[in-house]
Structures are given as structure tokens and as C-alpha cells.
Amino acid sequence: MGNVRPVSAEDVEQLLRLFARDPIAHCFVESRVHIAGVDPWKLGGEILGYYKDGQLASALFSGANLVPIEATPAAIAAFADYLRPRLRRSSSMLGRAEEVLDLWRLLEPAWGVARAVRDVQPLMAISSNGPIEPDPEVRCIRLDELDAYLPAAIDMFTEEIGVSPVAGGNTLAYRSRCADLIRTGRSFGRVRDGLVEFKAEVGAVSPFVCQVQGVWVDPSLRGRGISIPGMAAVVVAARARFSPTVSLYVNDFNTPARKAYLAVGFEQVGTFATVLF
Image (cartoon, rainbow, N blue to C red; front, side, top):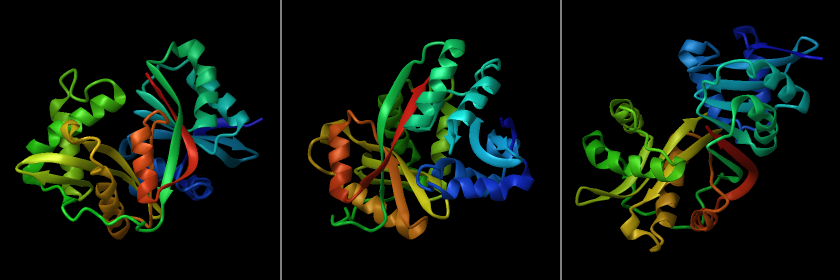
């Protein structure tokens, strides 16, 4: 039997070896650890470790999201026992489908019915610039374009998650988050006459993989194929600026998006699942 406890600074090398087993799937958490280590205050959550014979065998990021990392069945059972009596702080659970769904099966009786369970989300990646000519008008969004960018970001988030990111008085926090992405060169888009027509963001960056999120096309322009050269441009820029491999995950029912990513050159490398609370 193993035991669960927070991962300490002394165990970071073991944690990095867990990430290395699947750097694409673990990009989100690894990106945070490379910046903040495992200090919960800097990390925005804690990393729980499942230790067996004194060695780190599996892990779980516990913050605004719950993210299993190389979680074995024994580790999932132990994490569930650890979390079950505690107040849920996370708004979602995401990661490799088999781990997320097994953990949720054990937690649901205690935590209650989820708002949504998206059990099949293809995890896709590309490690070249692909066959599509990039849209030359897609570029980094400028900070003076924040007011134009913010409505597009809100619209995308609301469509994807089902709730507005600015609900409950969160406008300033979300605006600050978008401004930070722009300031760090992670927001890309095509802007014409002061209107954002296409956008995407690089939300997580590890030394090996960066993860694209927030892909959005103005509703009046959908169906015209502008996301394909737009995403090709984002891939070129992200590989040049951040990491050699670009990844993303997408809902299986979003057929137009999946076709667009395949056209750009993305290939499915795994399956994610997301539980929304």
C-alpha cells in the first residue's frame, strides 16, 4: 500500500520524471512547476504525491483544476480517499480520460453530480510547421487591443465552458488574465478594423510542449475556413517562440474544429476528459 502526501521540493526530480513519461499530456502542470516549483502559494495549488516504498509513483495537481499525473488505479483510489472528506475547491477535473473518469467515479458519490462530463476529448499535437500556408495577418495581439480582444475571449470561454468568465463580478480578474497573456506574447489573432476575427492563446509552456487554448472565430465568419491558416500561423509562431511541439485538446463533438486541426497537421496522441463542477 502507498500513502498520499504533498510533494516536497526534495522530490521535484521524481516529479519531473513522471512528467517525462508523457510530456504532452502533462504540459499544463509541468509548465507551472518549471515556473513555481511545488510551493503551493506560487503554484496556485498543491501537488499531492502517491508514494510507494518511499518513491513517488503518481501525482495529482489540486488547485482550480484537479489534474491526475501518471495515476495508477491504486493511486486513484488513494487520492479519492484523501479528497473525499475535504471541501471541493476545484471548478473542474481534467487530464487523461481513463484517470479522470476513474477518479470521478470514486468522488461523485461524495461531491455530487457534475455540471458536465466531457468524456472524449482528443488530445492532439504537431511537431512541425505543417502543410498549410499560415495566415500572414495572424500576429501577436497588442496590449492596446485588449478592449477589442476581451469580448472575443469572453465569448469563446462562455461557448466552451457554459458559463461566463466574468460572472459574479470577475470582470477585473479576467481582464487581468487576458492582459497578462497579451503582455507575455501568448495571445494571437487576426484583427481588422478594430475587430478580432480569429484568436488563439498559448496557455501553458513547458520546455518540450506548449498548449494552445481559446481558439475562436467570429460567428459571422464561421464556415469560411479561416481557422485553418490561422491555426497554421499560431503553430509556426508558438514553435518559434515557446516549444518544439504544439498541443491542444478538443471536444469530440466539435467536428469542424477537429477537421481544421487535422488539416493543419495535428495528430491525435491521446484522449482527455474534463469534468466541470
